[in-house]
Image (cartoon, rainbow, N blue to C red; front, side):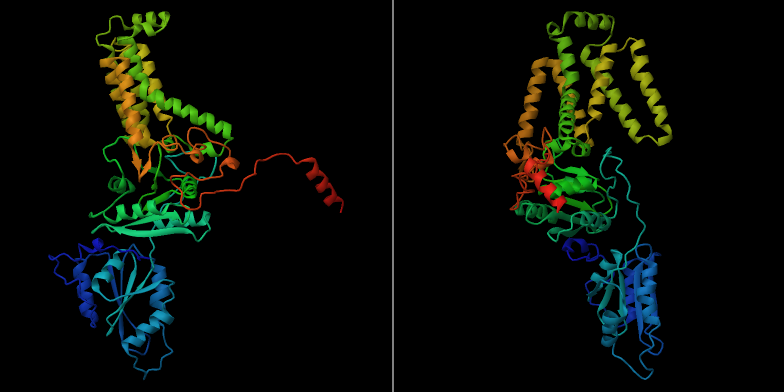
Length: 536
């Protein structure tokens, strides 16, 4: 299972300050090997080392090493200990050599499906840390490694961060092998590639690069490998940490790597030619390369009629712009361009603002910051306090601030609409980026009026046009224009129209389905042929 171990993962065991010569070969003496292993682990209480005899008639001893909690105890008992200790088909006078005993263990007795050999203490310790079981034979300097991992994991449940009304309900869990098996279960093709890497000198976190050979572009796959291989760190605890090491523009507020915990979304991106990066210990996988429209689409778009899906996507784009521009536009219009507002509405706003102590910009900032604080508190507060936070937010933002004469009711409405619009975005990463950029446009609108909002939007457009996600333009398929990708950007065309994969992402195999699959009622000729078949 550990076929892609990197050199950097063993830095801790190879450090000069270690009291144990970790680069040594495995000794012939079991006691010396046991002392080395115990010393390397600092006599940790979860380290299990057991000595057993090889059968009933032979005095040769074996050493079984594993970490409690990382292995399947029943598997060790049934696959290792029982076959070894109950061996009785060698007569008492037989005195086999250690190499013969080792060969018997590997080829006949140990019933586990995956067995490997290691010859150094360093490799043995690494395998034990990964949850494997090591078996050493007295008088033999090679250890047998059995893959008997087994730890408790969370059940497969519906996604809580990407809810959908229709479609599959399964989402990823924290165990990477379970996640890759879910992908294998849906894509039953040998071209599905799963390449593993190990990152971290101490944590040694497993990373999986998942793609479909021939569909994914080879140059992008190689770029993913290169960026992951050059990471040198103690440990990677989550996919978010990994994302910071491999993204194209670390100082941009726009996310250039998509995250998902939904299996169906992962499968669809793999079939487009994109690459999925999975991390042990986190249910969120990373999707590269991505574009800005991936953060606006929802899984429900693909389980509804294409017209409904397109309308919902247009609605999200509109809410995207509302969340970004509405406060700045309102402050700019009321403070600098009141002639742009219809007269009855302008008079109503002026009447509400009469007697307020703050200018429109400060009023909007006060309410926007209060709303962000309420939203953050509702996420971070314990569940038992969520109702209290909601009640306080309604009272503070709604009634008390207006009654106290600090803000106008119309400003409360504007900030509330803005907050609702930001919550309608399916991606939290994009939503929080828009929330930050909203303040920039608000300040520009409060200082420079509509000119500031227009210049700010122009700067954002230029910035998004220059962004890249693993070399692919962030604004594709709009800039540059890609006809094959337009059907899944601002709109969602019918499935039978999606003949080609995105040009800039896919590899050699760019055709996803045959032409001429538009559903239609049978023609008169087909009806006649069907009737003849029924008569015959």
